[in-house]
Length: 365
Image (cartoon, rainbow, N blue to C red; front, side, top):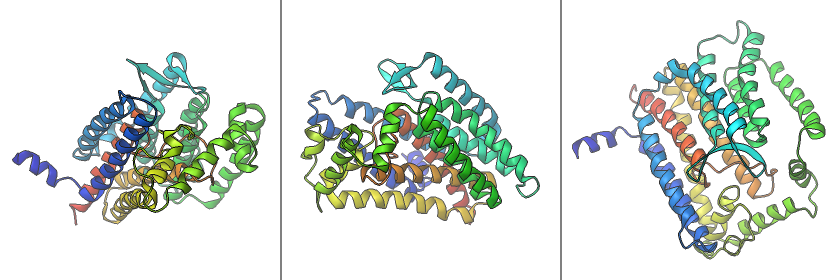
């Protein structure tokens, strides 16, 4: 018991507590969704519960370890990411049109969720050991090549949502390391050109439909999904309809309720109060991470927090925007809440790494 208490005192509960609250929201809503979809076995709930337990173990292992070891293994992790993405294209399973999962005993492992964490570690190592001001074009090109290699393998699956996040992670590092503005303008121009070419030659019909629905809402299947999510968000009122009583999710009007649109389920069943708690948890997590940056004396560690916090913010912002109809549907999870073992364990591993940086920064005050 003394050893457990000693370990508990090393945990930054200002960071860990809101993560645990979000995990509780996830389990509560998946329990509700499982009941509403006639799942007497509650298989979704039990699978997520197992991943929550595994993910928390991973979180505390990384949180109480020394993040400096990741610096030494960053190159090997990057090679592992390449191998995983190539292997999933050869041996992976296709789900919802994307060949991005390994199947193990009825469970799916999505390697791109691990790749996101690996890219953050790799870019943090690279930018922590160079001076951008000395040769900006070289460092722009090298870091871009590292990112694009992974991005191309993800686009081929195709998983455009995850590819956009990998690209976003790179842009966050460029901004954080104070690259000249002309490089960011070059990225914006290139992105516009690539999207135009992709629309003509690479996008599949359902991907064009998603973007077309966002730019010009019309009577399409994708627009139906967004409309149902908006209805669910608006139907919850102040206190919500109660767990298990959300008509949109329980009567199966809301598509992908357990993944893409779980925020809409929370809004309908737990109302404005539930949504406010979810927002508060994310604000606490991001504030705690950002507030630790001035205390950190390790540039590698600071960049890990910048990349990790940036990824969590992007996923949260895009997912909630999808649910409210202000952003196109690109199939991204709500961190720590959406159903999915790979994403959950990946997010908790990343949170544990950032906790390790934050804890060591705070202990040096």
